[in-house]
Length: 343
Ligand code: FES
Ligand SMILES: [Fe+2]
Image (cartoon, rainbow, N blue to C red; front, side, top):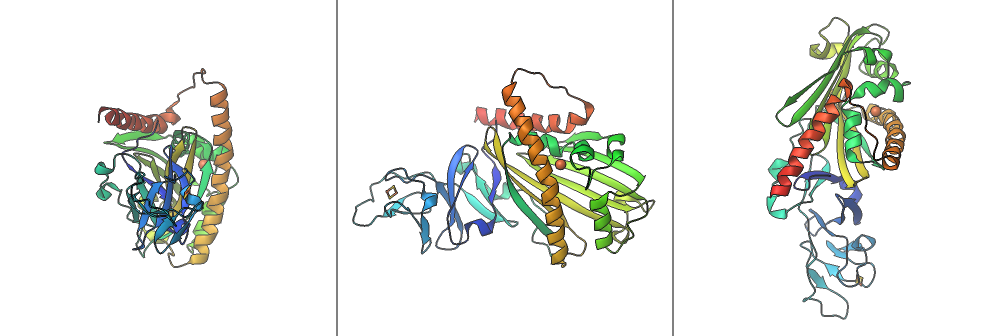
């Protein structure tokens, strides 16, 4: 269903500032918090005393304290103390490898010995002053792979996002899917079209005319376990499209980290990284609001699609050429799952 020997985005750093956060990831109930040295820590969300969720407790001097009877838990899952009790012999609970990197807290949900921080994908736009990033988190009630399908086929923009980024020409432009190692790439190029509202606003924000024809592109890249980064943009027509010089275009990367919660739900970390006007925080906020609204439109579609699929598990679905990106991505995931079964 989902690979576990891999890094997933668990939360953003602000979510564990000064308090523990309980979050289920890949079927595991986990509590995230900051330990004594300020480093993120993650242990099972289960107090070994009576099974209360530790996430309802609090952090005192870098130690997680159970909110039921005050048991103090160490970052490694070993009980440290409990008021008036001798607890050193209590069994350990599970701890999880965690890393803070690129503005996210990452967790490894599989075998701890295999967790190598070097396996976290490099993100060239993160921690880079030439880029700005804004994003959010949605809890979505559907299989994380339905979200991957959605992002690896942007045909749906024409229909689901008709008032912002959708336009008829998306439908009409041929889509190409290719696989490079474990990366799946779906691309679409549209030439000499008028930009839809979201991109008109982006052109204006970048000091460019928004009432002239543009060349538009969408290049979706899936990498396992479930990251989809999409290069999107528009350039004034005839200036080179995707390869146009920066002064002729507005371009950015749509960032999607899709973290499974259960077989039919996931945490969707969405955002946009751009390398024009990175210092303009107001623009970051405006884009974030617009993008949040657009991705809310996907949520309704995907959740009701999931409900339909659960109601009719026996139905065969159609596979069209536009579905190739999702199909190939699922193939890569299946290979990873097979690999894990062998370990
Ligand atoms: S259940 Fe946690 S201290 Fe009792
Ligand atoms: Fe969408």
